[in-house]
Length: 199
Image 1 (tube, helix red, strand yellow):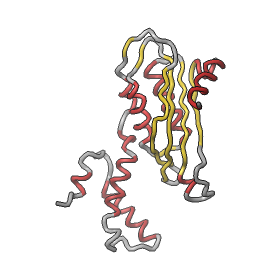
Image 2 (cartoon, helix red, strand yellow; image 1 turned 90 degrees about the horizontal axis):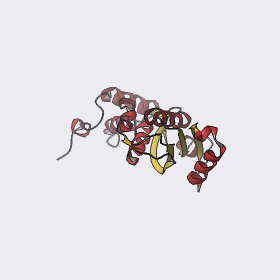
Image 3 (cartoon, one colour; image 1 turned 180 degrees about the vertical axis):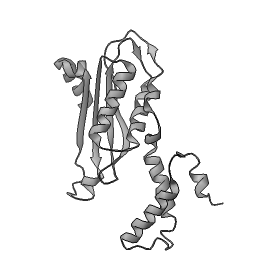
Image 4 (cartoon, helix red, strand yellow; image 1 turned 90 degrees about the vertical axis):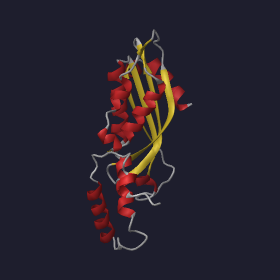
């Protein structure tokens, strides 16, 4: 039994205008010289609408909610979660960029579940953006919600807009960082976190 489009989108954001996306995809296909009604492309607009709903689902979520539940803990040394894989979408060409995020913070009386940092990265990633902004948003969320005395976020990603078009340089990695509090102000703390992230 074949699933209908409605069944397939049941678990996806309902704020998305799927019909509008499908019409836009048909327009694009026609504009590049394709026939959106030929057998191989008939279901493409619906597929693309579901793909965009998934890739942009972070627009309709509040990632800060993952950091609301904390635990009192007398621990004031670094907490680092490395190599959090993500996929996001460059807002300049609507092509994906993929990589890993490293998130570190220095607690000040409370900690969060480690998986919550990965959930924040995942949801912030699911929106059209530039890597620089994504890095800053994650750092700001961790600093604000955890009242951390230091936050460091480093993102390493490969951008499709550089690897499959334009300059066509696959394998080129873009690295961005955002430092807050002690990681920005204290040279020793900054050197420690960067050495652990980049080892």
